[in-house]
Length: 112
Image (cartoon, rainbow, N blue to C red):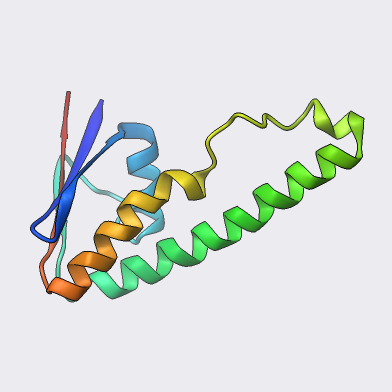
């Protein structure tokens, strides 16, 4: 399943369903349904939530990777090629920021 995010302020963002649903939950939409919307009024809160969570995840990911470099035992537990949550969140965070600036909503639909 894919989820497509749309905004008149940015290009479409397409994500695998599991990741998109997790990001929607973290942005304040715990039961997103097959389609939904971040209204213009909801955009700042959603952007702040995702940005904060992405910053926290970036710090945790870096710390884990640095620890793995220092300790061979931890090296096996860290997948250095894995795409972290913060990396997956960037396109949606950018879309939310552009939508805030342009004062347009962000919608999503499930498909595929």
